[in-house]
Amino acid sequence: MHHDADVVLALKAVADRLGAAAAQEAAMTCSAFNGLVRVADGIGIQLDEGTEANTRSARVELGLDQFGGATNTEVPEGPDVEAGSVMAMFAADS
Amino acid sequence: MDWTYSESPVAIPAELGELHRSTFTALGEPGTWWTGQERSDMVREVRAARECSHCEERSEALVPMAVAGEHTAATSLSAEVVEVVHRVTTDASRITGSWASARIAALDAAPYSEIIGTVAIVNALDVHCKALGLAVAEAPAVVLGEPSRVLPRDVTDTESAYVPQDPDHQNANVRRALTMVPQTLNAFFGLVGRMYSGAAFGDLIWNHRALDRPQVELLAARTSALNECFY
Image 1 (cartoon, each protein chain N blue to C red):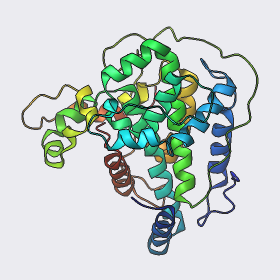
Image 2 (image 1 turned 90 degrees about the vertical axis):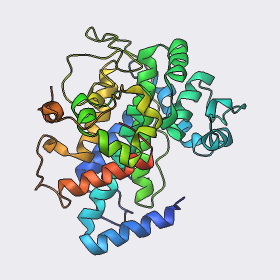
Image 3 (image 1 turned 45 degrees about the vertical axis):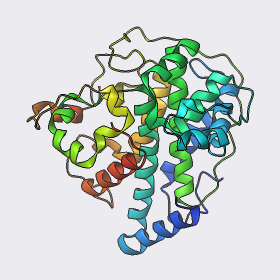
């Protein structure tokens, strides 16, 4: 468990090493994803099809399939699949 | 808390502070399914959840719902709403389909979705304050009025999430998650979109920030892993 003072010390360490703008962006990114994870788990969305197919071995290696939210996605057993659709999510916003 | 972040140890862009202020302030205004009072109370409940002994006991339990007890609520919101706000704040990764189904049966899918988006906004903004060593802002002032209660026509039960989605909404599934409540969807992604990628989400190489994209994605992945988020 980190305490608030530790977080600020870590922020200052990043600022000393990479600059204040980088530290600000790091704080901003981590904050954004503390929101995104709650939407993903609260709504129960599935892993995007291309990402699922392309990350099977990495997820096993990292133990990610043990996370509770994994039950929302049908995960076939087998090796990674080259997934052309993995880039679809990077298309322009609708 | 001053949304100009004047007390921050690192400078915060003025437009980001303004975005945070406007997004947070709007949580006190009527939403699609909840009044400004109820939405402002959800902000209070997010903060109460972090101090809630029942949430703490559940978080430490192998089976959270096996822990009997009541939340330490800070508002007069219904027990169902308090349950959703507290659970999503403190133990979102272990939410199950059966838990969500029970909450949605009690609240309906669209109001449930608005709670999820609201809780996510508050958590993102509060973590940002915490990362800067700043106190969080007081719950937003309440604006009187009625919720719009407008349900989008294009949402349907896709069986790909706990709530109906707009199947034609493009991009990653997380962008589709809140399509049942467009007001909340726009507020949430207006906020986190700016905080994550800005307008460069589709670009694999970023030159517009102090951090490059691999550095940002590493932070994103680490944050998601610490939250045990599979998605």
